[in-house]
Length: 166
Image (cartoon, rainbow, N blue to C red; front, side, top):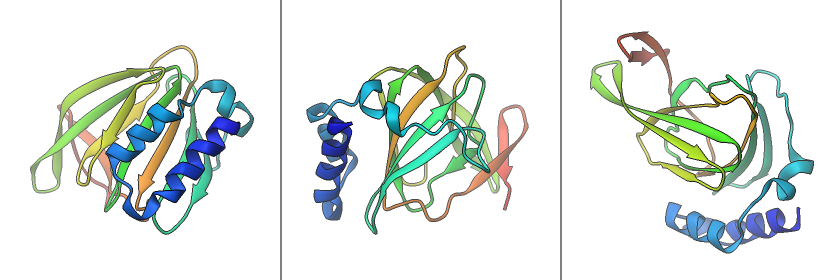
């Protein structure tokens, strides 16, 4: 837990000029393990298929801890005006990236598999879906800057194409 607090306080001290590179560097300086987060894990969160706990939120940065049961996925989404860094603390996660192909439609372009200590960065305008396809839970640490205010959510139509829900 001490290392998690040090990681968070270091990010918060840089929050006015935070970049994905600075987040990755902070993760290297303060590697987060299951032992560091185990007391903060929430296995269920109303309105979500996964557990979600806000560790810190300011006007500049939001730090979350997510618990992914086996077989659970996020919706296909973007992060609005925020970029996001997802660090796998324990388990495995699949990150599927999509791109816009027509007005209101996107197509699957890439699948990335992340395992313990891997990190995935989503930049402005990226559209993706995270899922735990393993038989064991996944724990991930998420950092968004600025904090998530608005997200576009998309629905799968056919042939790996999706369209916005609204």
